[in-house]
Image (cartoon, rainbow, N blue to C red; front, side, top):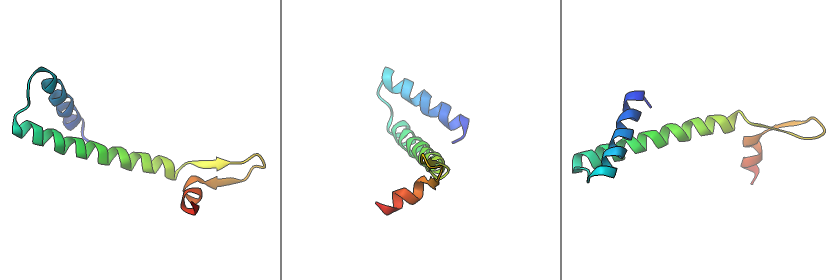
Length: 70
């Protein structure tokens, strides 16, 4: 998410604490939240993809291979 969009989302959050948002602002906030959550989920998935479990015997297993078995 671009910094300007993140700044706008924060600005809308501050405005919502002071007064009711207009319908256009509410719609914009919802769109920006969805964009933020999509970016967060993508980054978190990339983190999980690069996570490795290392056992005491030294074997290393990618986390995703453990997750798929369950």
